[in-house]
Image 1: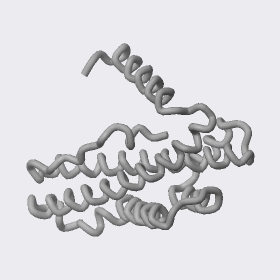
Image 2: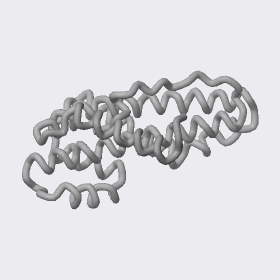
Image 3: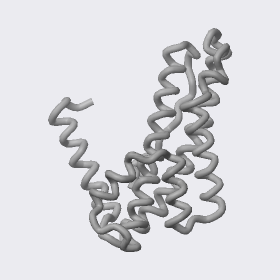
Amino acid sequence: MSRFAEVPLVIPEPARGDLEEMYAFLGAALFVAQGLELEVTNLVAGVRYANGSVLDSSTIFQELESRTFGRLLVDVRKHAEVSQGTEQLLRKALEERNRLVHRFIHEHDEDQYSTAGRMRMIDDLRSIMQVFREADAATNQLSGAIWKQFGLTQSVIDDHVRAQLARVVARDGAG
């Protein structure tokens, strides 16, 4: 289950509108998109594990990690029951993910040359990130309910996150 749904991600307000800030927002949008893809992978793996079509969780994750986001959503439709609202949200997230990766720079090719244009780019990126966050939260609820059946509760996830953070602090120091 994704930690993005448990830890509120505040999408910051832009401050300067310079090229560096626009690139930071672009990177943040890609980061949130990848988090959503991981959450959808968790959902598909959980559903397939729950219905008995896979017995080894490591095998299913290896298989699913090579799939595109669009292909993962096909799997969601095939293996999971999702509400029409969640389906629409996931479809919108796929559209925005593909636009971000394949067309965003082209759509904004002149905007990068001015502060006002970069601010338009940043506003667009912030909107895209919001779609990803909403889709991640909806998907997290579905996968969380499935994985809870197998003992993967919020407290287990919290323990895992604390262990991760302890390893990071031990390796890199605090901060």
